[in-house]
Length: 588
Image (cartoon, rainbow, N blue to C red; front, side, top):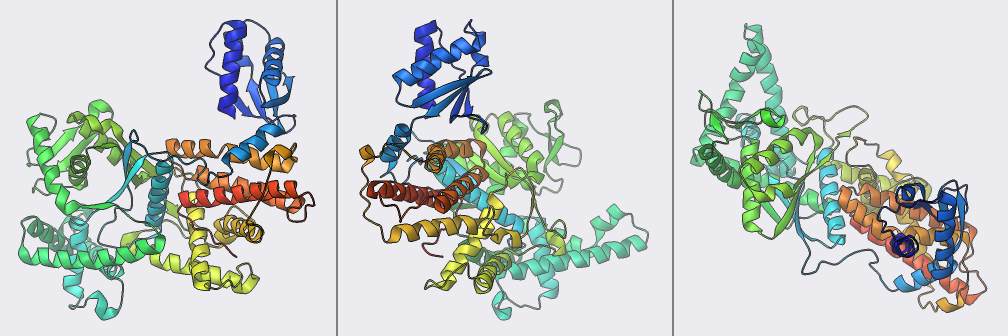
């Protein structure tokens, strides 16, 4: 609607004043004034030599006379308030009535291909609450970018090598007594994670003992016996020691098996997977290329660095003095390998927490300095951390919320609410419904927050059936399906509908902007725009439902209009939730 009005106003101004205007600004009319849309007149006076009153009247009269959109107008201190005609809204609903994916674009031969990376865990610990935000954000953005007409490749890089992995390996060798996950009936990733925590407990004790003997803190950290064992394992791994590689492969497989269970619980998936153990060698080759191009340089100890101080950054280590690689080594190799494997890619999105903002500035700048033209199409989807009421999570101290345990607890909470309050009625497959509602509460709570902001996670508030929550949205969808269940064959004659009520118009105004919200969510990489849009839509529908009779309306055509409107609201709730990775139940 807004774009239609912009085009009409541009033509009117061009015809009347002989001036082409591109900076037309529309906004929703303030509640204290009559109207639906407001055109700001002040910015136009820079090009059109007249006053706001004369300009507003000329545009308003022309719109009223020459378009079927505007019913009336008023001018208030440089603002042209436009009231949109009922016939426009009625025609709009008729036009989109049978478009089940209204607002969603399908890819075509000219569509871009975007690769989006998310999850990307280390194989020394299970997924936790922080990983949940990462996965939900990345998966949701893949759906939103797809709804914007792009081809999407979902991927992850598994950090399956390095000193952190060796720490878990050392702890298992020292304290594992040969036990495997199946022996203790525990998920593989949780099994390995316990040894990572165990390593750090022993490491801190050893550092403390060395400091008591007169070592400085730095000396103690670098000479703790358990750390030296882990460092030795890393060296032997990079030298392809058969025994080390065998243990490494076995322990990583335990973790992969555990990850798959968690991903299935969360409802996320990937089109392909990269492994640091494969790409770090390519990264080393790229670093050698940088040496040859004088982009990188050696220090006296044999380590390789890049100096980014002229770009406002610091020096960055690329290869240690002992020849082992660091995180950025594999990131260089992974980026290059992805382009080699998918030359059609026109953009790559990295979903990684804001603690790595500096890392990605460095990575993108290095790739640019190496002359890779595709480096300009890389984007870091940075997001804030997830905090608990008790404070920040720390994996090495074991103070994290395990992803599996959290998902299971959310499902149990859904069941408890059903038993206590009867909000979730018995509808056959209770377990499936509890999972739908529990995961819906979790996902919506995480995604309704702007990615840039930190989240204080509170599971209890995520189930509020009267607030901005997943269950609130799901309940509205189920209510609509209940209305429609005995009214499947709706015969609505739009030409016989001459006017609509205010609350019906409010819903249609919200529906009209849905395609724009999808576009904005894609541009801003923010699923929160979708979440808060659908929340506003549900609030409008609930107000409509509570104040206007639908099934009891005696005028059959008006009743049919309201059923068509309700059905369209249900479709958009469902489609919005799918963009968030949230399922909606047919009954609650």
